[in-house]
Image 1 (cartoon, rainbow, N blue to C red):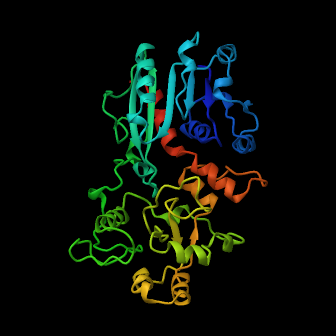
Image 2: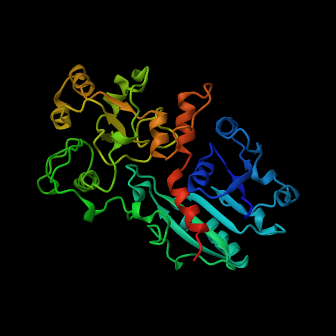
Image 3: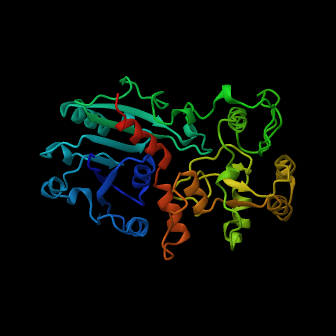
Length: 371
């Protein structure tokens, strides 16, 4: 019986890569997790108490320390160069970064290093919508392995926007574009809160600060039956849910730029580290009054007094997604949690810096699959 893979997790954060490794079912042991973020490390220890955690920067790692770990695989977020000098090259690498990394000089340096080291590799731009998850979070991923063991699929120099068809579990995977026209349900209008009732740019009436193209994109997403509804990821009865409702000041100030979704929607925007603290561009908010039509609230809103505006907006009962709900959308298991002392703001920040566990799991399975 082969020994478990020895895995080094760099920029480990709250353990998204570790969760993905576990979900993949691969026989593996994380021999060390490295991160300098104190709060993230507390969350990591809370969930993985038996994994050696090194609270230091990557630059602070000596080659002697790294070589002593004798690891087979590296899981990491930002790329690291120290591995060019290792005595033993790891057989497998998985890297995640933000979209835009694919055009950076750092990426060029990474590719040169991999090619010089004799690695075969494949790059991806993937979003959770690939797996039927109603959350847009497009990220760059790279998987690499020493060329003595080829991939189970033909690699290409192009950046793939979908999983290879040979990927384990590919039957539950769809194309990673934010919409999939072939999988749409046969309905013209979505039950989700969209401004206007027709996507024809010439006829559309927009009550919020969005374009007809944006409106059409949202409607297409909500009509994509291959993506699950948000209600599958929501918490049931939550004590003190009132703390998540948008305050009056935010409702009045940001009413026209909120990305509002209902439980029956099949989309949500990327949740950033500022979610719950800042409103603009940090993530979707949930309309919990599902019987109220958003058009009736937003129509002629600018003609109302401040008090009347607030009354109308409050009728939608809009709230932030809870940290647990964002964890669910990110694919963290139900057993994953936060220490009590980690504040709500800190949880949002940590989740905003994290990644999608299910995507990592599929990529690890793809990386290790035999031809």
